[in-house]
Length: 384
Image 1: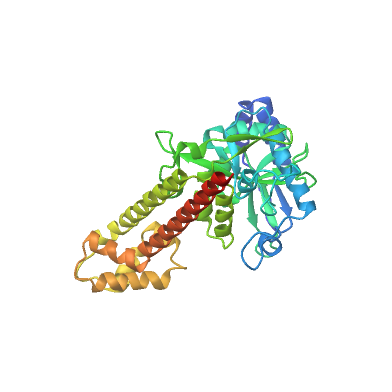
Image 2: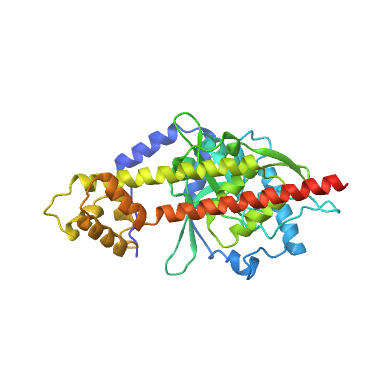
C-alpha cells in the first residue's frame, strides 16, 4: 500500500502563499486539477488494424465515420472560437480538408481520422489553458500502466505541460469538477508545441529553421465554423518524417490534392539537408569528448566505457550495446584517431549517409510524381 503523502508546515505555507498570488480563474483551475489529479482510462484502440489495409492505404471511411469526423472538425472550431490563438491542425486530416468536396458538397476524406492533432505556440500556452478550461478541456500527461495497459492521465497546468515529453502530452474533455468526459465529439486532443529559436524563427527536427509559412494557420470555413489547417509543405515535411507504412501513401494522396507545389518540395528538401548537416555536427560533438580522452594505452573496453559517459550514448546504451562495442573496437583499431576520422567511422557504422541518401531518393520520387501530375493537369486544361 502506498504511504499517504503529508506536506510539511513549510510546504503548506509556500502553497498558501502561491495560492494568494493566483487569479480567481487560476485558483479555480488549480482546485479542479487537485480534485481529479489522476484518472484512469482504458487502453487506446489500435488505429492501424481497423483503418489501414494490406497495401498500407487508408480504408475508405464509412458513413458513420464521416459523420464522426465532421463532428470533430466542427467541435474543434467551437473550442477555438474567438480565441485569436495561433493554432492549426496537424496530420493527415489536412489532406482530406485540402482534398475539397464531392458533387454533394461533402468533404472527400481519404480515410478515417480518429485522432485530432494540433500545433500551438509555446508562448500562448497560458492563454490556451484558459481557453480550453472555458470550453471544458484541460491539460493532462499520459502514461501507460505496465500491468493493466490502461492509460493513466495526470492533470497538470500549462507549465508542467510544456516541460513534459511530447509523447505524454494530452488534452482531455472534462466536466465542471475536472472529471474526464468521453461523451463529446472530441474526447482527446494531441498537442504539438511549436519551437522557435532566439530570433523567433520556427524550428523543425534537429532544431533546424523551417519556413515561417509552415508555422502559420490557414483558416477555412467548415460547416459554419472556422478551422485552421496546415500549410501543404508542412504536411509533406512531417509526413516524410513519420516513418509509418501508410505515410508514404498519404504523401501521394497529398500530391493528388493539387495543393503541393514544386516550391514546397524545394523547402522540404532544404529542411532535410539542414537536418543531415545538423545531425552530423551533433554526432561530432558527442564524440569529441571521447576523442580528447583517448590515449595509446586504452583498449576497446575502456573506449566503450568512455562512450557510455556521454549522456546521448548512455541513454540508448541498452538498445545499441553491440553497435557501441563495435564502434569502440573500430576506434581502437584506427591508426587515425583525429575527430574527423572518428566522425567518419561513426557516419559509416551508424549508416547516417545511407539513411540520408534514402531520404533524398524519396524527395526525388515525390518531385517526379508532382511534375508528372502538373503535366497531366496542363494537358487536361489545354484539351478543354
